[in-house]
Length: 424
Image (cartoon, rainbow, N blue to C red; front, side, top):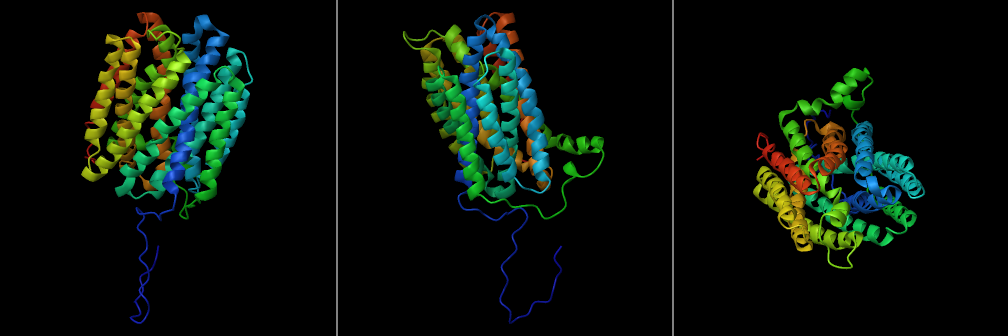
């Protein structure tokens, strides 16, 4: 702590010391974060939505729904575990770059392995490893916004960074649709994308190591105390409700989106000559352009009006309501409308909800750890979503009940935002 001294009137006035909540700005930080998040979403959307379902269907076409659900559910356990653990470890000294680069390069190796295997067991192992390593990367990248962006600019920053979903998702699905018949090449391309993004971020965005002692999440205390500290954020009222809202929204979204390739093949009446991967390549830009528009508008307007909850709640409610479109109209036109409206809703939700969460973090020095805990609300529902989706499709007779269940979960996510008190 600095000591107070009597100022010398003849001495030049020293520059003001930045407040703890106003970190030093780094030129080019947000564009680099946009690239890093775009690469991450390209892997998640391109591999998870196209390459992996294609690989599973080729191995066991008769049981593809249940098999994809099993692989997706087990792999999401790895995502749920590795994200907050990596976040807590990177909090130790406040260094993010080693975890960004290490996670990306290891993911490159795991994606190469996944592209070379031909049995369900090895595909499951490979996807688990990819989820684990990509979540190490994600935990460190996610923590950079609360680390280095002032609170007043979080909505704008989250909106710009949130464009990684529409940009990365579009690029990922387009690349995957072009390489779906050459899986090994496709997996290597995605590995190269995330490795290149990590190299750019870590080369041009320097770390700001923490000088104070390590936070409680990594102190040398008993494992029980470490676990208690690790989950302490959930004892914070507003953080807990933000966690619940995010979990419900993500569960509803991925219960449907994770099976979109199979929905297009088995449920939607596609135009003659249009294959499901090609349909994905057309639908994704529609959804992602809408997502980009709502991401920017939601983030900018939430900053201007200093309002977060209304944007998050309304967008979650819209995401729930649009799930009825493919139920009423299981056609190609219906899917186009659904994709556009779902993109609008999910883009606004993720941009503004991310800003909201950074404003309800209990302790700034535990930002990566607590953002990692929040990311359980991203990865955790993905454990449940494949099992829920496969059970609904096989047990309730198709994809219509799946849309209805996904819509109900999103509407519950909208209601969960209401109890948050410290953010308007």
